[in-house]
Amino acid sequence: MANSNPMVWDLDCFFAGGSESPAFSAFIADTERRIAELHQALNDTAERGADEARLTEWFERFQDIQLRLREADGFVGCLTAERVSDRKAVAWTETVQTLYARYRQALDLFDARLAEMPDDRFRAWTASGTAAEWSFVLNERREGTKDKMPPALEAVAGQLAVDGYHGWGEHYGTIMARIGIPWEDDGRKTILSAGQAANKMEHPDSSVRAKIMEEWEKAWSEQADLCADALNRLGGFRLKLYGLRGWNDVLKEPLRINRMSRATLEAMWTAVEDSIDPLRRYLSLKARLIGKQKLDWQDVEAPLPSEQSHIPFAEAAELIQEAFGRFNPRLAALAKRAFDERWIEAEDRPGKRPGGFCTDFPLERVTRIFMTYSGTSGNVSTLAHELGHAYHGEMVFGLPPFNQEYAMNVAETASTFAEALVGDELLKRAKTDTEKLALLDIRLQSAVSFCMNIRARFLFETRFYERRARGMLEAAELNELMTEAQREAFGDALGSWHPHFWASKLHFYLTDVPFYNFPYTFGYLFSTGILAAAEREGEGFRDRYDALLRDTGVMNVEDLAMRHLGVRLDRPDFWRSAVARAVSDVEPFERLSANSIFNKNLQND
Ligand SMILES: [Zn+2]
View 1 (tube, rainbow, N blue to C red):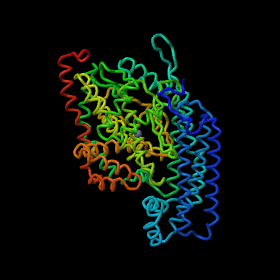
View 2: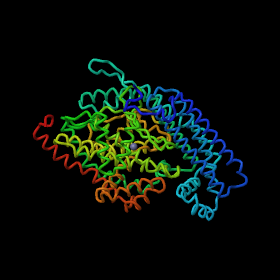
View 3: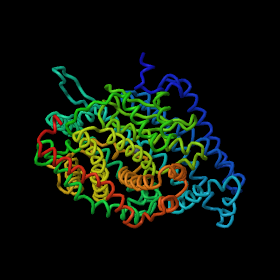
View 4: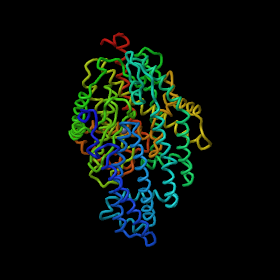
């Protein structure tokens, strides 16, 4: 029975019937009505001003609607991911985005009232009573309004964005659905979806990887003109909007969204840039281990030869719970619940979106996890990663809705932390040098991913915007820009590059969050620092960890780190120590690989 498959998630418990669900239709209609009523209330009082009691009531209504929109967004996100050809679900995406736009228009009116309020009254209102709990968020909204366009203009921009901005992001989904990669397994001809092909990139046989990479590049090069259109228009829209607001820094918005300063971002990249030498040594050793002079792009995340290359889903579930339990039984209990109650969509089947994510259903205070599980250790890491997100969700579900909204950079803290715990568990269970080497390799792959691959994306995107401000870029130019960024970030350590990466990576086409890259590196390194604290302090750290996660929605990152870790993020020191710890696996990797190469018996250790 499909509906009892432990690798297929349960969505019917939210709204039965998928994209045809009558219950979902009714939910959307009700949400739409609530937004309209609130909008009306804000308009009606526009001339008379607003007192504190009214602002409090409105904000409570916004929080109710916010939960409903997140719920709807989670639901349609799951539907479009599990079956990219579900046109009805794509239509719902558009509906939800329209509702979000109306909600934001109403919120803009509310923000304008906040901005109008005299400082002393605002301070008094948010210093006590119900509003005190929202003070960080209210203050942030008020400050954020001051350098935007007037509310009426922001409202128009928001409406035009549905078709003119988010539409391009959606269009990318249509392009991705066209990707079909011809493949032959044991003489059986098939067409792989983008998701299935991405999983094949982790194949242990380097000739299979080379073949899939060649087909992958070819498939994306055929869609490159369409992708370039989408990327150029998206970027152009963003730059025009920033220009209208009088902003001249493309990083202003992503930094603000991530509640961090430019000094912090620069301190982090400085530390990362200084760290690439050990990672280059690792890449060159890995090349020798698989019999090459230099690794090719598709080899970086390839597994090393090891006996245990396939991990059944049930075993992954057990292993993850064990690893989580060592740190904190609450984390293990959350994972158990996720497996038992079918929160996870993991089945390997055609028609699914590639990649993995975790999304909230805040009304039920649960999450859903999406991925394609084919039994690799990378899949196990992804699973642990998404469960880390789920734990973060659990920590904040009890807070006022707006206080639950943590930014992406700290969102990746819990996920990366969970991934590291599972990495430790895998290493502990390893019996042979070969196995240990393969596991250290997985951890170092993460270091490479966050310190090199993500940095390449950041360099690409930064330069893309510099060029885009002067005009459109053709696909060939984007290829060049991408390759140049990859060479630089990897210190030229690879033998070949992935020019169409800009086309194949969904992240560049996400419209809700610009620069969907540096927050990953932040989260990874921030969590590395937290891991060090957890190891130093043992059980006593559990509660501090939970408290840190709970505060992620109500502090900027500099304050968060100072309060719970006692460190400054706008100086390179913290980042240097985090990076040093992240690359500390290189040394044991060198030792073990020297033995393996010397004995030449890696395969039958
Ligand atoms: Zn994540």
